[in-house]
Amino acid sequence: MEKSSGKRNTAILISGRGSNLKSLIKYSKKKKSLIKIVLVVSNNFNAKGLNYANKYKINNIFIKYSNRKIFENRLLKLLKKNNVDLICLAGFMKILSGSFIKKFYRPILNIHPSLLPKYKGLNTHNRAIQNKDKYSGATVHIVNEKLDSGKIILQEKVKILKSDSVRNLEKKVLKIEHKIYPKAIIRFLTSY
Image 1 (cartoon, helix red, strand yellow):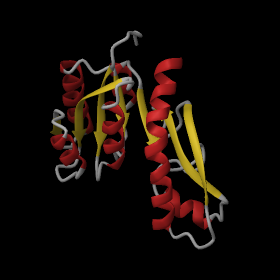
Image 2 (cartoon, rainbow, N blue to C red):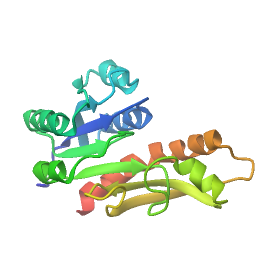
Image 3 (cartoon, rainbow, N blue to C red):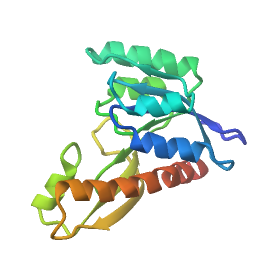
Image 4 (cartoon, rainbow, N blue to C red):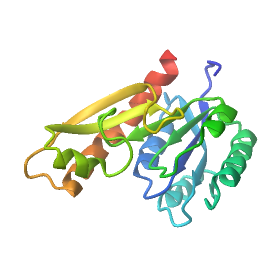
């Protein structure tokens, strides 16, 4: 990826409510932001996050995910058409194939609601509580071919209280996610 004074054209992939998308849009609107969100893609037609994209007049599209290969081919064409330099996964609940990652050949970042390498995949809060962990948190990492296994860019932790339910812990971790995703993007784009 070439470094230039311009902002990086960024695509955000979502599946749901879009709270991290909203946080990234806020960051992208700042004068010193390093990204320009040019595209929001969802595999879920009813993703609430698409409303944020519409509200901020960001080009957005739903791509049906009935077949991974078809989905990824459509996505690659869109990314190329929009000159996307960076993908940020923000609650995107599908796994991108190794083939897609190679073909895109630019960075893909993801935010995950655990202190990786602990609790890859789903149900992270439940697993942390079940195991009586003292801390949980969020991790921003580079996406590679293995699930939630890429190089870690930034992590932050929160204390798990004995009284925390899965829902409470999810809310605490989400607050951290909103804070660290923009910081991780800055760290990534200024140091890689």
